[in-house]
Length: 143
Ligand SMILES: Cc1cc2nc3c(=O)[nH]c(=O)nc-3n(C[C@H](O)[C@H](O)[C@H](O)COP(=O)(O)O)c2cc1C
Image (cartoon, rainbow, N blue to C red; front, side, top):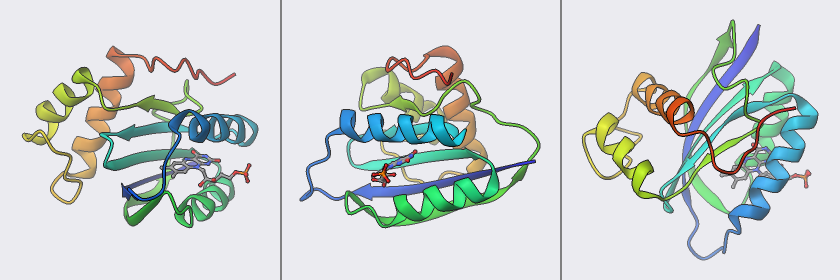
C-alpha cells in the first residue's frame, strides 16, 4: 500500500525559482526515498503528485509545504492507493510549453489551470495523458 498525495500551489513571484535546481534536489531526494510523481507548472501555479511510502510522503510534503518558493497550497487529495501511477518517474516535469497548454485546454476547458475547478480525477487524467504521450523531457526516469 502506497500513499498518493496531490496539491496545487501558487508560485511566489518575488522569490526567483530556478526550476532546474528545484528539480535536481527533488529527483535526488525522491530517488533516495523511492518517491515518484509529477510536477506540473504553467509558470504561475504548480500541481504536484507524490507517491510512495506513507511516512516518506509525509516527511517530504512537510518540507515542500514550508518552501518559500510557493504559497497558498491547496491539498487536493491524500490517501492510500494500491499502486503507483507514475512509477517510472522520480519526478516527471512539465513546464510552460505549448503542448502542456494544449493538455490543460483538453482537461480543464480553459487555458488556465484552475485546480479549484478541476476535479482530482481530471487532474490525474491530464497528468497520465501527459506522462504516457509526452514523456518528460527532463529524462528523470527512476532508477
Ligand atoms: C513546487 C515544489 C516542488 C517540490 N518538490 C519536491 C520533491 O518532489 N521532492 C523533494 O525532496 N523536494 C521538493 N521540493 C523542494 C523542497 O521544498 C525542499 O527544498 C527540499 O526537499 C530540501 O531538500 P534538502 O533537505 O535535501 O535540502 C519542491 C519544492 C517546490 C517549491
